[in-house]
Image (cartoon, rainbow, N blue to C red; front, side, top):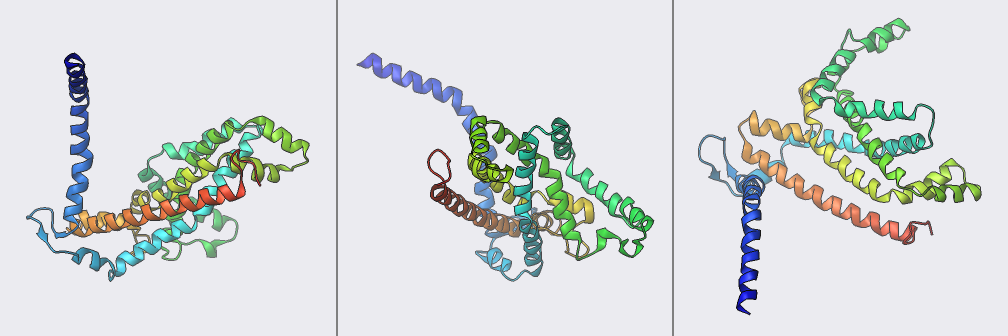
Length: 304
């Protein structure tokens, strides 16, 4: 009995010896910043002097900050394009999966933008869409000079251009994910659908979509996260968030508050609030999506 207990304590000690340093590093690098950030959100702090507790002032300030509301609206424009961001990569992956000529070329060409730095993409589009850029040269050459404008300072279009750049730069990642999901589908399902007389769109809707439902959910979550966190470099390198605040997204707004305007407490409060709201919305989405999946498909993924 005593030997068994000593053996148990020895195994626990060995486990603690190996895992202890790793857990300590994780706690220092992951857990402590979260705790510190939660504290800073309730303070007024400029990053230099000691923080001063100010209760819920940072959170109430968010409700009446017009620039924050503008930034949220700009991020909302990206989310409006989310269906395109989700559906087109799936459709393209399905077309490529049909082994069209040059499928490998298409896969590589759509993945290449993912490998390019967002800052480089922003500068590239500044050159293309500038007043004397290639786009305006082409427009003037075909007699559409009236449409040749400085796209980078057009307050109506600039945010949609930033949204388009974000989708273009991450589009290949969606194609890659969906291609991997489609490769795991049993070919006999498509053969059975063809025998039953199903056309391409019917095979896509009744075979492909149910089979990659999990990938669709994952990519949807990724799209929402990228909409709130991945436009900062593109927006800044393309138009510095302007003109005015026309292309300032919520992630760029948080960055400006923390590092340009000396209000890290306010920036942290915004970040925590958005984190909680996005988390709640994604949980609701996944629950509703899986509930609808249960109503539309049986356990094997076959439409009811």
